[in-house]
Length: 261
Image (cartoon, rainbow, N blue to C red; front, side):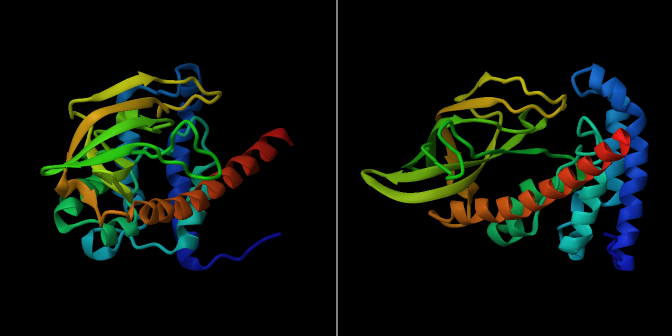
């Protein structure tokens, strides 16, 4: 079935196709080298993605974003999903919910730098018992000036390229449990332990390591939103990201069928 896409969507499909064509010649080399191409080529691809505006697709125009519709973004990711080794998945992509959840200082310090590539994030949410039901056992104990976070996080995708975490934990104040919260946590904080990096069947340059947090101090100013709001923000991220993952899968499946026929 053919779907006639609006012209503003077709325009972004062409932009995405141009980026895809730029990365495809490096697929075999990446496949043979654990997902990596030459460093200078990787850097060129990352900068090209930023220059095209791919890192600002979901962000408003008044802060330098492209403010694309969901349809435009899905169309872009369907094209980029045709790439192997996730070569087109080489840029950070801040989302609109972050602007609603974060303070002005947090936006300046953590969110805007994702758009220009000067900072890189990773999400520390999943735990060993997580499945279709999100299970959060990590604890954020309230102390003077902030929180002490303890727990273990699995599949922290892209952590090998990141310099800060979005980390989810349950706030405890003495014997009282307040609820889930989301925090910014710089990766250079004391008490962060890299446990191991499991091997996967794909060859991505973005790995999925396991981290343990041992009474890691997070200042109050790094709390995102209010105490107890963390799951709301995580679900906002999940809803959008799962849609874009589905788009990438459609693109990958289309290419597979074309290659096999």
